[in-house]
Length: 260
Image 1 (tube, rainbow, N blue to C red):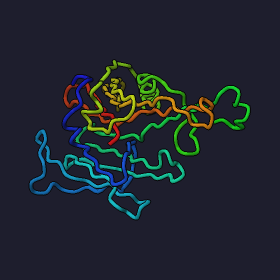
Image 2 (image 1 turned 90 degrees about the vertical axis):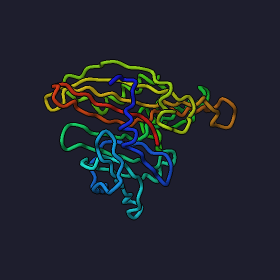
Image 3 (image 1 turned 135 degrees about the horizontal axis):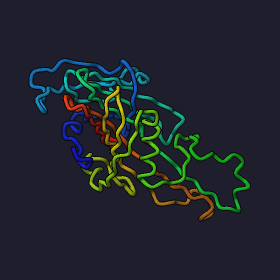
Image 4 (image 1 turned 90 degrees about the horizontal axis):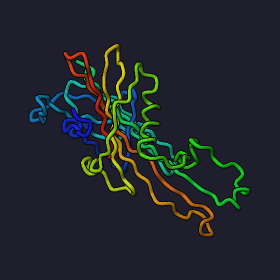
């Protein structure tokens, strides 16, 4: 599979609906996701029956939070997390679906939301405790100066796969139409990007392609006097999956990026 291809199977696999707006996903283990058998008339994709699973929000009394369509044999773990004080990023969904027959799996990661706040030099003396780079701020966003799409994607991959054995950077590709292909709402400065890496999983070589949609706003005046304080909002929307090619001795992981 070419790095530029987003598998139709996995786009249909994770058709999620949330009643409270945007989310992103992350690897997790949670019993709230419900598994069902394939009913009559269930969609068949690539010879597999797909069924609807529901992830519930335990912090909201067990209300249904997301529906996911999976092959009927797959296992699903999912979780909704609320941080009520994080007004800029109060809720995150995480999910992990796995095929018990082989190494196929799908992971989702929370939205990476960053803010960069620049205070004019003559006013910095009045900022008593400025947040450090990489530190989460009071309203939930992480304080970090803007980075290019490839750089922040590499930082993210290092965070989630930094301990794997025989890590290899295989390649990267710009995907201008990724946000549209994933039917994402338009955000400022959107750019699609894909990165493929290789490493050993359970003693076997695999390849994993991460797809992400980067966004970045233009700096805006966030203070009183013009130019006193400027703020840039930016980040990365990521969704991730992997599969191993049975019988070849070599596998690949596929990842799809986006906020639904």
